[in-house]
Image (cartoon, rainbow, N blue to C red; front, top):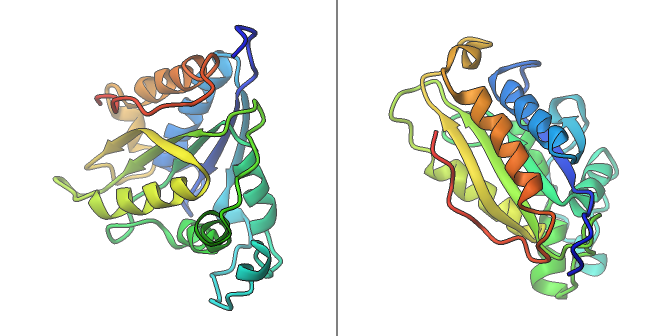
Length: 214
């Protein structure tokens, strides 16, 4: 790959139904870091979109595309175009909120593309065949089990040819805005945003790295 700097596109998905909640604050800090590093940032609040659940019609097996027309299609296009995908969502009953899970389930059409049709995903905006995935999550309980949600997110990222690159998880965060009182959370998210861009620029294949410590 040429040493010429590529502009990295970052898609931030705010998955909480609570506007301006703790995971969205984490996402905003992450995106601020990505912007500071020269990335092109886009943010979408999933709770403001109309994304129905998968109806299991199997029509996508014929074309690779979902036939249910709503806000899934533009988000699907942005996921394909992104170089970095940052999903931020609180833990709801050991998994993702319904608004995010609907997006995951509707990505069945990408599962069909990948595993049944064997069609390659178009390259990202910067020309990468692999993307970089980041998951930002908070839970209200102490000693919370994140294994279920992590597995779901990894499956979701894989459908979009996205390596699960890093995650930030915080426990005992309940009240709206409580993450701001955490001594390191927002700064860690900002620094991760910087790294997500800087470490993507000169790599054709965006490989996974060790998860950052929080």
